[in-house]
Length: 338
Image 1: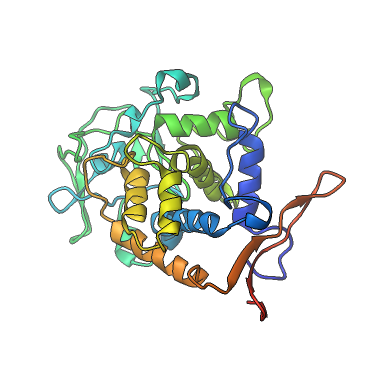
Image 2: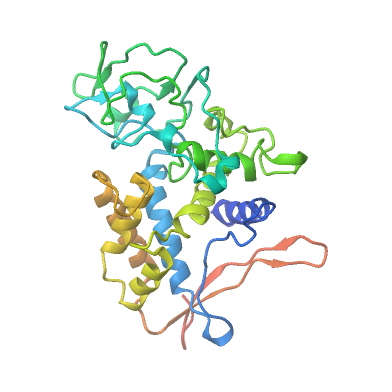
């Protein structure tokens, strides 16, 4: 963020907004974990690694291409099925539903829904520019595929990895920084941050129905929307993930205490983000890129240096209810600020 711009950095601004708004429901403890311990024993290395894990996912999923809508990545027999909008890597996004205790949050699946991805980004690789945008519609008409070699769309019946050959009810593809997808997570977004809040409760995006499919067209008017979506899912699903096989918070602590060497940590996180669970079947085709991004971020932070102390100096509330923003500082003992 340029120094001459006023206000907090977009990511931090988004975090504060998401915490405040999502706390209006039953999740008042939702926040990105910045530290471990308290007082003189405060250790921010855990929080920095947590943030690096989020940014590594976002870098590959959206930042590198400046995208808000999910696009084609999953090839079947060398081509991209048009029905990838229903789900990639064997997933069915419309069937990614909430558990029975959270059904009230879930987006309804409407047979008449129809929308087209509107913000698929500015791709560094020009071949990406030619990949057709995801879309969904009310018809069960058979859909074809796209050949990334010839750059031609082909008609006919062609199934995605889950066997879908149409795009009916397939409006729940990924949006935001880490491609939040499925009827449950998009429904929670709508309940806590969007137009689906009950009883007229105020929200961050009262005019956006996150269940309608018309989401990323709002990015230009809402510059932090991509971050808000990603941070919401990170705090709601990833950071709190514990299926008995993989406990995210414990794995984070073990990774830091183990001198940042266990590559299984970020690879498992990538699997949870992309496939929905730590032990899901399927391949995370961009896992290597996420691993590389994560390790670059760790090298920039230089967390292994024993002569550095990390402390967070903000935000803090002012007496009038506003927020004074400070920065995260890296202090080198005996040498001033780094």
